[in-house]
Length: 221
Ligand SMILES: NC(=O)c1ccc[n+]([C@@H]2O[C@H](COP(=O)([O-])OP(=O)(O)OC[C@H]3O[C@@H](n4cnc5c(N)ncnc54)[C@H](OP(=O)(O)O)[C@@H]3O)[C@@H](O)[C@H]2O)c1
Image (cartoon, rainbow, N blue to C red; front, side, top):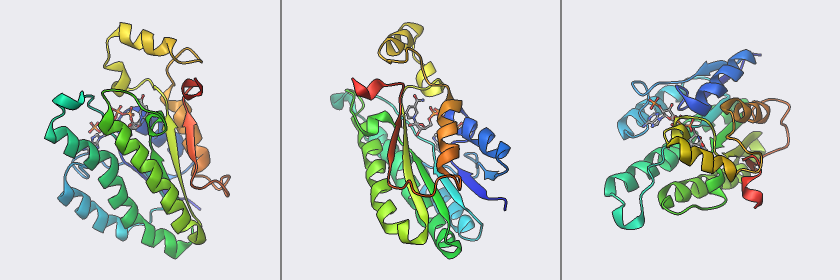
């Protein structure tokens, strides 16, 4: 049976790699762009939420995320609101819309793309760190709530990955990040996608509430 996966942020980076791998696995993939679903806009989320209540969604992947590092004294109100909105509020609202159908069919897989900064911290990134720790809490709580309905909820926590989010840094900065990674290089987005592919498949029948770190060894130090 062909399953349907909805993914946010499928236009670039890790999301694009997930879209590509799931299409190869014969999923029907819904990857709305910003004109269909703008996670900064509550009206847009509400409208999309109404739409997915009437659409078969077997797999939901909350992937889109933003990070605008600012020291605490310079942190703008706009950054506070927007980071929490995109990284935390929008994923919860999409899960809320997708769960009734999953419950009806007694099968569902929800993946929250968090970050290794959902388990450790980094200066100048309080908002990002807070939202990624927060989404991991949501994963664990919902895993408890939804396990009786055969809906498995997991977080994937990448380390530094070769996407715009990291590649926008100066080459010297990227080299210094790589020196800090035990494997000695950034992750390829396809390496993250392969993990997601397993977690959303029927092969995963027992993992739920897991906070899975995939970081080339970074958090071991
Ligand atoms: N790259 C890393 O090193 C890294 C490490 C750990 C965790 N992560 C997490 O992995 C996820 C994907 O990151 P990435 O590196 O692939 O990011 P990216 O290359 O910067 O891409 C971000 C994606 O999110 C979408 N997006 C951003 N704001 C949006 C909004 N308001 N409404 C709808 N879509 C929006 C973007 O859409 P547009 O194309 O329209 O802008 C884009 O598809 C994020 O949650 C990030 O926190 C990344």
